[in-house]
Each structure stands twice: as structure tokens, then as C-alpha cells.
Length: 71
Image (cartoon, rainbow, N blue to C red; front, top):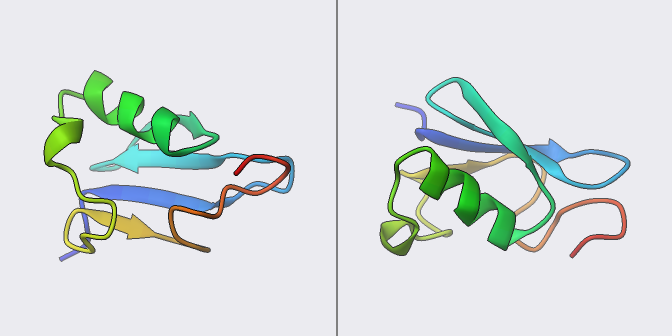
């Protein structure tokens, strides 16, 4: 089963699209953006572990890769 949260590959201009259960949440430019999108989607960011592959599927790099000039 796929993870409910997908962080898509970095955009050439920076940022990564984030989706949860097929719904696009936004374009994150770092971990803080990702956690805010999850909060707005009704998830508790305090219970999400960025290295939990059952919760987050990282495509094109992990939580340290955001593309462009962001980091």
C-alpha cells in the first residue's frame, strides 16, 4: 500500500508538490511548509515522522532536498 502522503520530486525552480490521499496540498519549499500543509489537511504534524516510509513517500530525494535555492 502506498503512503498516504507523497512529497513529489523537486521542481527545477524550487519546491516540491505535496499530496495526501491523492489531493494536492500545495508546493512546499521546506519541512516547515510540509508540516503546515499536513496540519491544514487535519493531520497532526507532531505524530508524523519524516523518515516513516509508511506515512510519507519521498520521490526524488528525502527531506533535505527541495530543489532550486531552497534547503
